[in-house]
Image (cartoon, rainbow, N blue to C red; front, side, top):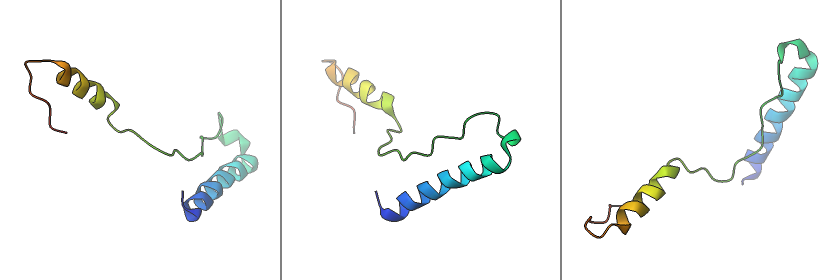
Length: 64
């Protein structure tokens, strides 16, 4: 992860914490999770569909 991105994540987290400290009545629950996610799979079901279709003998492989 780039240094600039790490700084912005830390700054956002600090902002949430300070905002909650200034006005705790406004926050009904915990602050959102500000940790960085390394990888995101936008279509997790796609892999299983491709695997199922490629296992069938009479079906042509799906284009990837």
